Length: 314
Image (cartoon, rainbow, N blue to C red; front, side, top):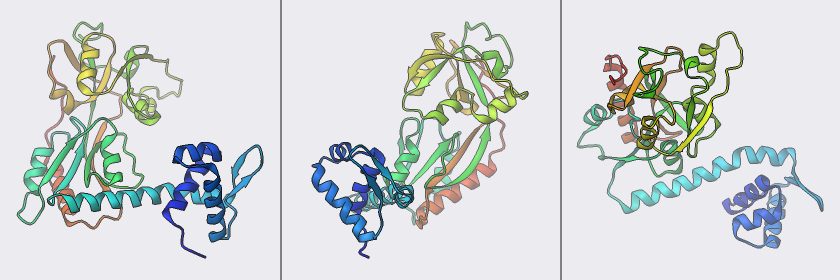
């Protein structure tokens, strides 16, 4: 059996995901006939039938489904390796850190101080949008990331650093602004922001409808009343403006709220909302001494951090 070429594997993934040779060829930017020949050649190399073809449909065989389970990760790993190699070849040695605004839980400055050493490359921090840090590490564009809940472990090693409560963000004139603390049920029916690009798990978490929040907020198992879909937001400043205009309420980690005190906003503890976890993440299988040093520094600083998080004053 000949070894599989990455090109053949990429062709197979396109067909297996589309289950249509015409759409797969269009996605790959090639003609359908050479794509069909390439898939047939791959099956011949493997000695396996990967796809069942009829005039009406294409389906995966059991062997094809098994290959599709692993193939995207193999392709992503190969692409990431090339990206990292190019980055190392064309730049001065550095450790690229990816994080979201407020994603460090107030730890970053101390982590950088603990990490610094003449024997280690300097850290270059890249601040990206929600959901972006993990993708940068997986693609090879970043070496390490600071992540917040919800955490996706696929392809990553993750070390949790700290856990902090989340608070409700309300307009200063909101009907509940005078309350000292809230429950998730108090905000049922309120408009909640829709995060641009958020998947179902992330949207549920940021709206306080993740599994842990549902269990603690509605412990008897009754379905919670529906919330109202609020405006679409893409970053933290836009979120805060939306809430200040009383177009939505939102939930943020307490340390993030503490960084943005505003006269037109109030931050209130929510007693039964799931917390926010800050974690450091890096690609599985990494043997980089710089990454290991950064992770050690992050863990050491987190272990020293004992100051409780509190909601910011209005």
